[in-house]
View 1 (spheres, rainbow, N blue to C red):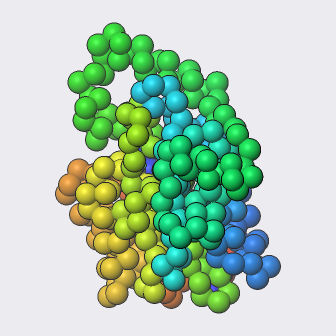
View 2 (tube, helix red, strand yellow; view 1 turned 60 degrees about the vertical axis):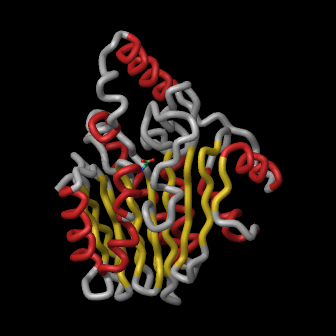
Length: 298
Ligand code: GLY
């Protein structure tokens, strides 16, 4: 079937040109793998690694810092055969999505977290890497100065209000290969200034992503809101009677009713794509029948 869609996070319009460039590079690289008869897993992973390696997203290199000034990342992968793997609160790795894939393919578990996830990454031969950048440290220092000065503290306990001003910029991809197999991924450092140990929706199957015989969905945005609504599973269930786009639109309408700032991408069994968000922008691209389509805020 060979269809792929990627997203660069539901958030603000900041750095939209740079994010557009990275999203297009990711979708084209993933599609090339599909065209060369590669698997949906390899295509979705390749696209996600490219987005993790771009400093313009809150995933991998350039990730946002938690309240203690450290990067804790979540990433996950799922296929339509219900194979799953995720890491949560992992530090000091370059590509959390690759560790999530190792969890899926090499262990009897689904989610590894914290130090256990890091130890597992070491066992898999993954080298230690500091994903912070000058830009992410500058943003952290700026926000902390505001918080310490008493500004913004009233927003901090209420993340839905807080993230209105800052990006979550989770990244994700869905690919369908020649054999009609689906793979869906997600990767993030979560909401900036989160408390240490906090998991968002990204490593939570059914919330941040889901795939089964009906199709696949990847979510981005305010993790707590997405978890409460089990948004990805809800959108996949809707594909029983609706196209990917209709299913995403219905799920997004529900998210709006719950004041959940988020976005969804989807592909259904017929290879139709779906896209929608409640944020200011969500840079995304898909390739179907060789034709590339890019969308961000409309
Ligand atoms: N969707 C990213 C997060 O809330 O962690």
